[in-house]
Amino acid sequence: MPADSFYSLKTTTLSGEAADLSQYKGKVTLVVNVASKCGLTPQYDGLQKLHDEYKEKGFSVLGFPSNDFGQQEPGAPEEIAAFCKKNYGVTFPMFHKVVTKEGADQSPEYDLLGKGGGSLPSWNFAKYLVGKDGKVVQFFASKVTPDAKELKDAIDKAIAQK
Image 1 (cartoon, rainbow, N blue to C red):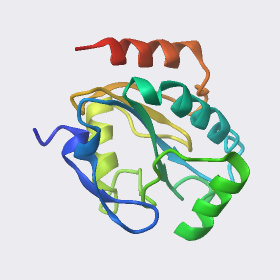
Image 2: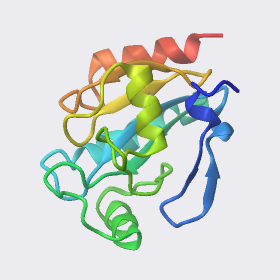
Image 3: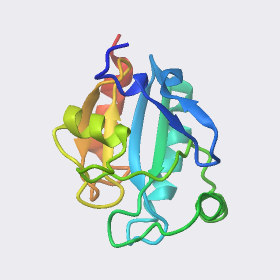
Image 4: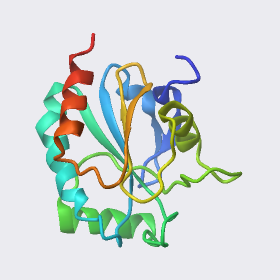
């Protein structure tokens, strides 16, 4: 896979296990920088609904906790996982806490997403729609909710791609 493919990356799950994103090759994913103490945290509910609605069509939401904005994800991995499960019934894959902002500490995931999507998150719950080839199809700002028509239309279109 080319180095510009999100699915060429190896990462770590929220529980600390090695994860190879190549398992999503041929699928469409929505990569979201999430936070537990944000005004937008209720988007977890919509993200879970989106994941459930589309998972049989080769789609998955991928959550990457981030403490970059307002220190709104201060928790340890176990706390984040428990919060998401208890409050929102999250079953979509969650990965290690990342740095989304440009700089020496920026995670490889967000370095690649930022280059491919043309922008980096300016707040929590920014969304990257990643196509079957691992390339960013479209970037959606935090205010675009999981049930937004423009987002669902883009997901439908990406899933329909051969």
